[in-house]
Image 1 (tube, rainbow, N blue to C red):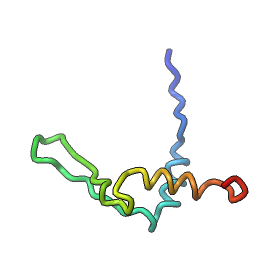
Image 2: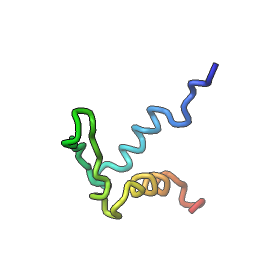
Image 3: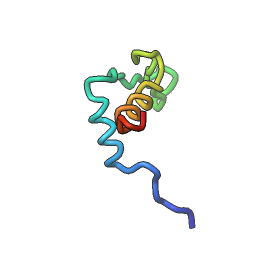
Length: 68
């Protein structure tokens, strides 16, 4: 049987969301006209123009200063 343990917990996600609050742009979920179940997140609206801003900011802001 496969393991169901996730490397990231719900508490991790909530902590990251709190760190990003007011820093990352809140991007909308857009419904595409190609079908009823096709949605996209325009992460290109982030300051850096990519989704990587959230992960990079979260990693740096949660790293102790003496480890930077």
